[in-house]
Length: 432
Image (cartoon, rainbow, N blue to C red; front, side):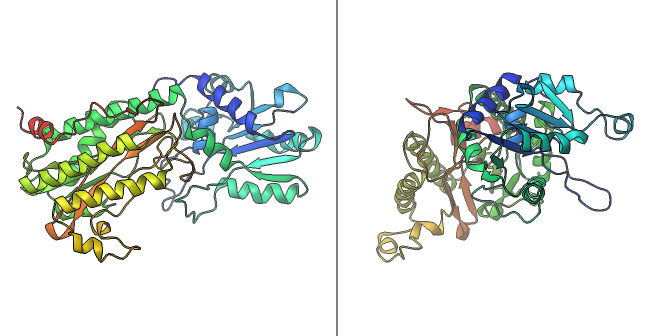
């Protein structure tokens, strides 16, 4: 692996927290993600199932975690099933985890090769008093799954083989656990943010008229990988000129022109944990007065949002307050007027012409991390704050985004050291 060992203590703690939430006589099972095909014999880079990684730290394909806390034989209360190493695999795919290595990473003592899964799973299902079987599904609020996952195939198989057990969703349990970050998780996310900072500062020195969006992308990935990241936390958005009014522009093919702005929604992962940064910078190294006025309006909203996103706030109530701030700033910028507000359709208010997305989302092992958006914001959760103003008729947009840890007294900004003031950005871009 590229990064230093996370430490098994985090994963041991996470499994203990899971066990506390399970019903008596329960079993919980988690599958790794599939390796996804491209074309012919090609495959996409492997990305581990976030829940499995959260509970084990294991990044290897075809892995299974089985937790059965009440099983009579203590050695079968936690079992990690792994693909067995072989000389053939070593030659074609490289090193696979040994049992000892898996124990050191996960803190799980009982490691079994996947060839032994069916018989041992049957033994635990019928001999251990197992009644409730917790199985995993992707229940993310933005999920629209169109492929059958390894978890989905297992659910079909398990219900057919053992139809009289009681099946329970484990996703709500994992969502609640993962929402509150442990200290070690915050440290890993801080490292992701620090790597992101290095990439952003590198790009500030590079950007000038004539550079292409894909050249900027290359600078980022060079810096990220050089600092032990696997690369981008998500597909990078490097949107210059009119492209930056498109929320998810990812073509990154345009030449950057003098006088334009570039919206950079680009961030690094570290040890599977993510950061999520957005900055908007001037191609020529100086904002125009109009660009700076819009930029500072967005920055004011972000700073107010930082104060407002606090424990016990409900996200959707917070979003409504942000929308009021946005309305005020748009009035100040003369993008809307009081007549627009008076005559607006309540289902499509005037501000939505220029601000058409949510201000925040949870962040962690997934960029849009799990958690119930209708619950109150909780101490220990990590959120993005990312207001934006997009002016299609003027050919530019501005978004600014930082990541914060919700704490009792005040939020902790994981991106506090990343330049955000317009003048500081200009200064760096124009320094020798």
